[in-house]
Image 1 (tube, protein in one colour):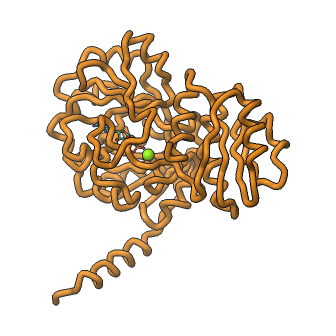
Image 2 (image 1 turned 30 degrees about the vertical axis):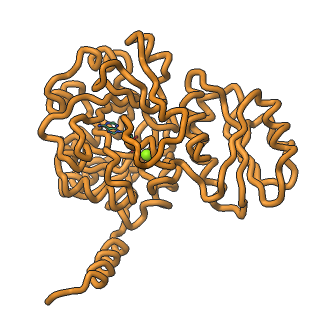
Image 3 (image 1 turned 90 degrees about the vertical axis):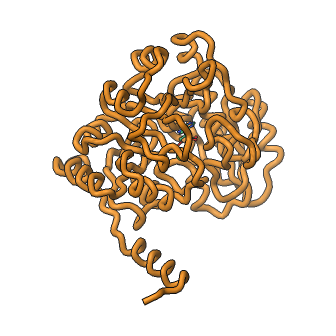
Length: 353
Ligand code: AMP
Ligand code: MG
């Protein structure tokens, strides 16, 4: 019988609504095995990494990978990072590994760094979105690596949030965005780094930083010497512009209320914000200033001098505003040194630059 498109859409929605997302606890020794079996069956499983939670699928299975785009509402031109558990797996994914990739891997893997390299044939277009390159990362989180090993396949895994929303750093965040849309989530507690991996491309004439993250620009330069910085880190890029990391042109990390960032010396920015707040205002600030914004919803994201805490807290605190009635958010922001470049990038992107 022929069905109208509307009926098909409703049926598909019903099927998705009926999926029960199982939480697989770290304490159960069968959890990794169960998650691996789901992945081998072409299902989606959220997994903890040291950066943020990811939604994983078998990277060689184009049909499974397509489900990630549906679950996230991810734009079709934004490619996925492939996760491996041992360096030698890179040779299956990339026919000619550049010498710089080995240098970077030696210095920063396992860890929060993704390299873009030429892609081999086993990576389907669903992962690379038609590019001839692929992003590869070897995470340090023991559960992520155990799952990659147990499933026996490389895992394509973007952050486990609805596209455009702040990334997820706890199982509660993952369930908020993905309950009913994925088969399971492996519970590894809160993520240690808190912002996503650094993305560096080795597929251009010179190495170029595409996304700041857990490994800093200074660390990359200490290994490679010159590293360029993509302009998408500093300015808003129009949807129609071709960029090196397609993901960088989209609005990201945004809570529901609009965000305004004030940059500069923390003391001065706190004073500036205090002088400009109005009714129903939310303030994202360093711990030191939490008491100077009367009648506001205040979310602190670490001491002004503790970039590690700021990276761990920033997405959780941005998400917290969504449980409130705030209609605007003012935010403090660290300077661009070290891990500050990654934290500042996430806050500026939350504000749409
Ligand atoms: P996420 O989806 O949060 O894991 O972010 C992945 C980031 O890596 C996005 O900004 C992607 O656009 C970028 N990325 C992944 N694969 C590639 C690739 N082959 N070339 C350039 N950027 C990539
Ligand atoms: Mg993401």
